Image 1 (spheres, rainbow over the protein chains, first blue to last red):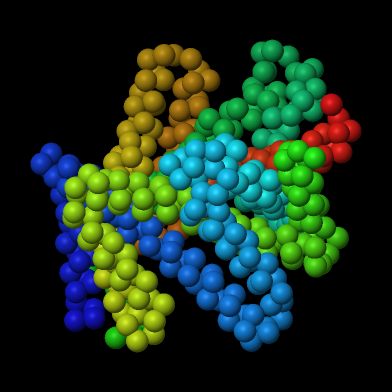
Image 2: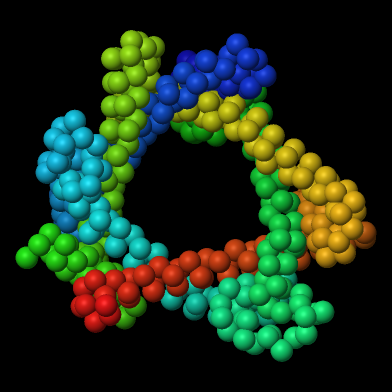
Length: 224
Length: 211
């Protein structure tokens, strides 16, 4: 009961969505199913939010190391929920979109979420530089190819690349770094991307078939 | 002081707070990080609530009279049972629904757009380039076709990579390495661009040193 019904649901829904691709009559069902799916998926985010609150409340209650930061996290989360749910400071009131320009929700996004997220990702520039130093020491052929390709792409998109190879004659224009970068992007890079994409697609097809046919059951967990 | 001035100060404090991590892990960084987690989780939570639950369930389902969407709510509530140890198994039903929908939808989508379309483009571009007659174009398309084929050979693990097959797989991994190198180059550039953006914000919007 605890395992058979979920497997039946998965097989039925999966089969309907596959058949909907071939049958024009099932197109509406596919559209309706997508909205239905969005509503269910929304609760997955609620589950994530509830989990965030639970984990941080537990951390505070047990006075685990760093519990003070959990208060800050919960305060930020609660503040956004309160402002967003009641649309506080929204110029169009409760009828307006939460992201309406000038609303408090949008202001917090503009001055907190956007700069924090941009800075957090920009921080990776430094770590990528140090990691690449360790990873890209041309130890073998593959690492050397990766290093050279990355270097040409980086140089090819900057003014330095243009200046460095501006002396190369026009009949050998492919050897100019910006042109070489374009060639790498449109030929070997495209080939590698296509191989990866086709490989992923075949993997998705085989995994989907395993799920729909009930061969793959790891999503049910180990407990009965 | 206007809203933008206070906002710029808050944004500058948070930006510098995150950048202090470059020196070492510290209290200011951790506070900024905690704010980031809480505020961004709240932002996405609310966006999803109004976009999906309100617009799709309330407006389409209740006001639009599509009562079958209640099924989505019931399955969604069942998903929250995951929070309880006793009745956590109930969450498998909505999970099965989501996995089934994604498996069914993506199986066809990936097969047509990622596998068949890519194979067709590779072959058709090769034949088309011969008709065009431009040597660079022909060489480029031969490289794409050879790279795609050898890359796929590399991903075939049911046969040992030895002899001609192994040599082709070796060429395939070189092409894949070029792809990774290009992706790495672009990642570095995008991160650098973000960093320049933050420095530009600090110097122009906050300190007003650059007009």
